[in-house]
Length: 167
Ligand code: SF4
Image 1: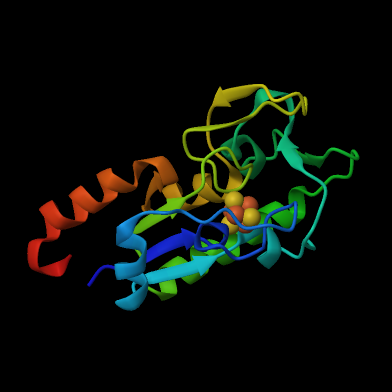
Image 2: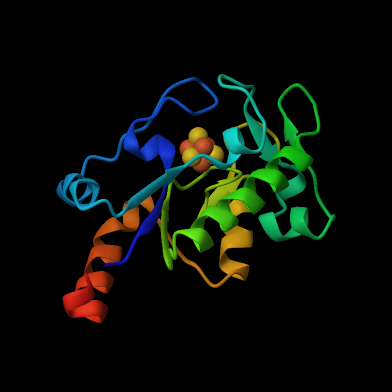
């Protein structure tokens, strides 16, 4: 049975920068929970950042890959450089995913860690751009398929369709 890495905040855990969760309300979540398939994890907390914490964005409209390659930093709105914490969190997330044999991840979009379809541009003015967070970039390098929270139906369809008895 496939295990799925999931953003801890999507399970309602109060790990977001604002000290809140953002529970994903979908019938399959309860089923997957009961089946023990969900591996909840928060990259930013695991990287050593406190909760609550100031919001952070990847600078200059760059992406998670740019952070991993040293071309961009992750900065809090205060100007504090939290690049090292974000990379540490990404590495721990990949380690957990591998240890749990996760081939799929369901992560909340828009986050500088967990975003897979869009992130914010570093101006802290609400401007989005297509791109991915630091953890997603590292998960994808490890061959783990990342689905955004709004793509949960596609993940369900993929698991049910591709795996059949293994779903
Ligand atoms: Fe949620 Fe990911 Fe942000 Fe942690 S790093 S609060 S799991 S979106």
